[in-house]
Length: 315
Image 1 (cartoon, one colour):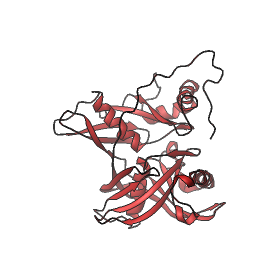
Image 2 (cartoon, rainbow, N blue to C red):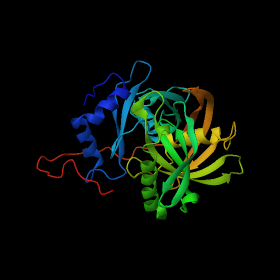
Image 3 (spheres, one colour):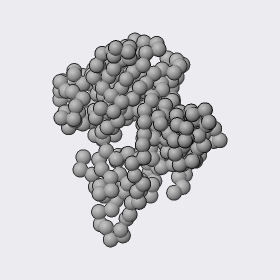
């Protein structure tokens, strides 16, 4: 499928209003082919010759501005399929255009050229606001707003009387929806120069697990994004936002890494690669390290007699 627009950012904006593209997204995301937490992307041409390709990330409610774990997966996919040739050094930069900017999947390979891990080098990320008060059914909560290619509200889960644990997931989904709705009219969620990137994308519920014996800051999180969708990974762009918030508030020291666990026990390692500025404010370039593996090669079919097409979601 061809996607109109000169850049990936323009392609996303047009895809949102294109009934043909949006119907395809729904077919892939909705049951019976997908599920409430389905996530994917359409590969597109890059904005220019400086990147290998572009991607339109999507979920059950629309099109994302960024996805860190998706970038890691695309880097591994690009090398494992031969789309990008592995560098003999064992480290290959796969450059990808996403709606929030140009990012890198720095893929490490073994002696056979197969991917073993990847680093997600993000766009400049920053603390947008801290100590933002949000009224919820669990009381008044304080969140920090962090940008990591998308805007996240970061909330200490203990302050809401919950845990980052599967048994609390339904309550976290509902609270995530509340936090996002409560911030919908807050002027601080407006992007300073691109309204297409405005709005809170998700709520990151985090637990501070202290400092590991090896010196890394250790946290666990679950991200509830879009309309109650759950990121079961530690969330790549969300991890980048956490790095920006933690560094700006002094919780993550220069040279210290963040070990970021998910609700299912998977793990990212993250660090600040460099300090910079964005939109007149201090910012950092975060690097998030993780893995991605091929699990299937699927063909989805639409029967013209199927009255349920494009499908349905129950959450």
